[in-house]
Amino acid sequence: MTHTSATTLRRRTGLARLIVGTTLLLAPGFASKQFFGCAATPIHRLLFRLVAGRDIVLGLGLLNEQPGQRTWIRAGIFADAIDIASSIRELGPIPPRRLVPGMLLASTFIVSATAIEKRQDTPMASTALPTTETR
Image (cartoon, rainbow, N blue to C red; front, side):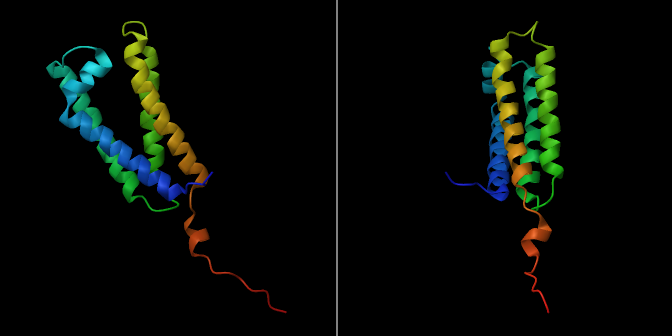
């Protein structure tokens, strides 16, 4: 089993967010059908395009974040935690089968971000020169 670096995980997560965001932006009707089981209304299209913008920005932020930085990783965790909490709150009026896919996607992004945090490359560690002991 290979150990994936924080940089590789950050890149993959950033690309995944870009793909999700671009899909929501370009095909809000598809997203509405998958998440809500109905054709998109103007409100659905607006909602999915707003979420698309957020995921595109988070993806670009992750792709441009330097090793040792955590701003975009943590912003994504915060946004995904809000998505999950909001979905749980709506479990009565909206059937679970419509909320679970989005909750799983948000959970996957949180797990990935947590793995990035644990494997985070620190700038000092990557640029530090070896020390030699003098006698």
